[in-house]
Image (cartoon, helix red, strand yellow):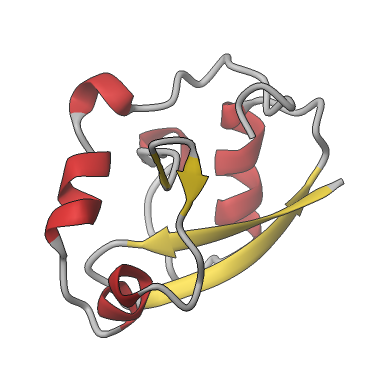
Length: 99
């Protein structure tokens, strides 16, 4: 099991999700929907997930950019991490290489 910190951009919500390292991105989407039903009002497969990592370094929950997300702001760093070519593939496994 790993604990991933997830953020809903534009909503101001940052929350942890526990998930097995052998699960897929699609499984993570289902887990987010299950755990945060008041946050996700649509099918889990419509969620778009991106890694919050820049230059091999993970964003920290105390980073200014994460604090901005909590305040419903959309900082440039987050915009840069959410480019279409960085979108996680649903069939990819959450393994040590990805995480």
